Image (cartoon, rainbow over all chains, first blue to last red; front, side):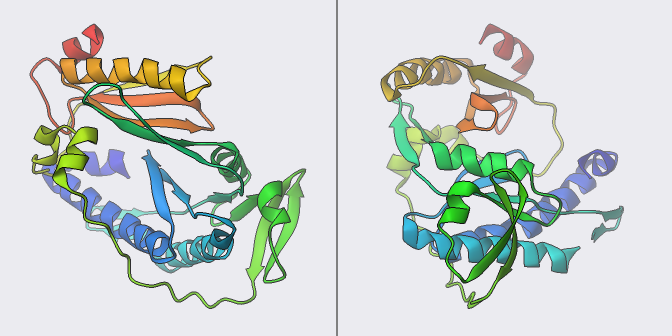
Length: 74
Length: 192
């Protein structure tokens, strides 16, 4: 996607950046909304931490919600 | 698929989950600081993610052990399980609450010239420096080494992106040319 949009220069950068925001922001919202936080972004991935044993359920629900979100986007 | 005026692009996601200890430490003996998270759970989720196909959630054995009846997972490899179903799916998450950080604190981690930098969207050539290091296990030894690196990064005008202890081993990533760019990014990176 980056490669293809790079051919379109400034305008491509706008499009790419806007689409990345539109993918990442809901993921961030889901994680923080379930009481987790993102410890690191690396490339096209991120690591999220949900503290304690009480974090297991919100962590599972977040994972499920993220998959659902991508399914709707696809 | 996400569609743009320049065509459609397929997107997908893979998720790995683990359960266990995670250490959090702040490093930096000088004025520049950084932080890291590491531990069996950080490595475990990265390993589990490798077994995940597109749109799959994979749990490692430590996570699987801690599931109750509300989740169903099926073994796909020794020690790895595919999440099949969550039964009590009452997934009403609250609105995200972000803590507003004081600039004084943030500027210990990110140079203020970067905090104040207004980011324009553009494609730009950047020198990325990915360094993997071995043999430093204790927080003290990591702190000593990375403190030195942080100082040098500032000196050469680089941007210390992150320190990571995931599936790629102990590593850190530094950029020359983003968010702030100099005429001689390449030379700065080589000197560094």
